[in-house]
Amino acid sequence: MHIEIDDLSRPAIHALLEEHLRNMREISPPESVHALDLSKLRSPDITFWTVWEDAQLIGCGALKELDRRHGEIKSMRTPEALRRKGAGRAILAHIIEQATARGYERLSLETGSFDAFKPARQLYESVGFVYCGPFGTYGEDPNSMFMTLRL
Image (cartoon, rainbow, N blue to C red; front, side):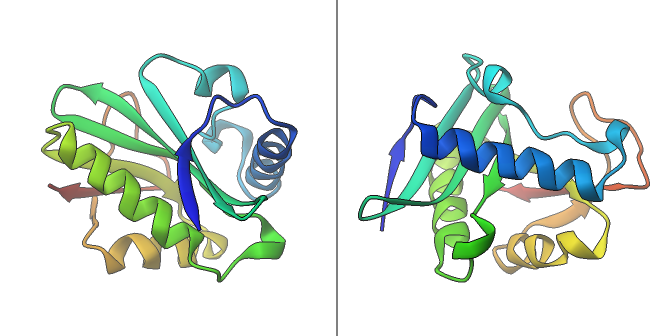
């Protein structure tokens, strides 16, 4: 398994991000879908990584700089058919490492409140994320849960 910075140009990542957006739209009301499309992920304040097993894409994740001391995890995803290989945990560890190297004091994320998001919340909890209130431009939303990690 290896992780690399991705320029979002390969068809495999397009397909994974489409799966991600489609799934988020299926389980969350439109106003509560905070997943980013390709154009928004290409923003200069976002670094995007992919996780590969040989030539197969098995995951992705991004880090958005909110300010000099605070980052946000975006677009954490593993393909539905390739879960339970450790890609999610690997990309999360990589993002935490990168946020620490950048000097961030805090790393936060938004995730869903529905049962479908429970495995993701458990992953974040397992590395020390705790629940918090909305941050950045988010507002209160019964369909969202917010988590943060002090670095």
